[in-house]
Image 1 (cartoon, rainbow, N blue to C red):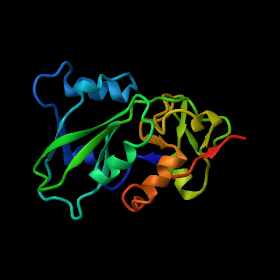
Image 2: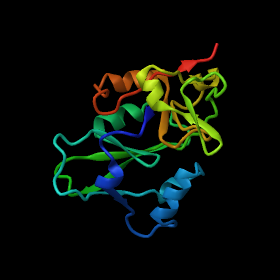
Image 3: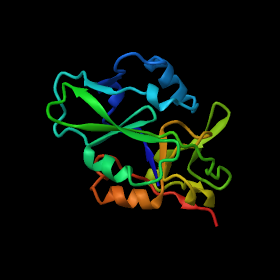
Image 4: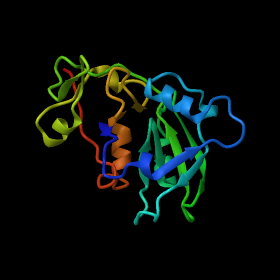
Length: 195
């Protein structure tokens, strides 16, 4: 399963993440590395979550994206931490301006090359490269096909050759998240496995 980071709740406008204390890298450098899909020293990742909107959304989301991080409530963190994160990590965030809510960050650091570009029909040409067209996949007008190697290794990952707006989940992890009634907040789109 894959999850697009596009949606009505855009954390980049509503939330900021700040580092706590002295850090080896600036948050801007960490963000650039994540976007470029480069390895990130998890100890340099931000630890403070601040809300900067005029009013808190109601209800407050239990899961939302921030770059290649997922910001999640304790119930989501508990589920995700039970799975193989590969090069990823789950850790608690200090939070300010969010009332009594607790949050955790999930860094999606594992990279797999599983997308079968040649047989996927949900794709669009951008800047000379094909990327997954998640809107076509969601509408049923195209398919996202992954190789069987997607069934091995980490349960949550990104694809180095795919647009940065997608995070992939194993069927087992997706099933566990669906039990938390995730679909309204964080809809998943199903991928096919190549024969």
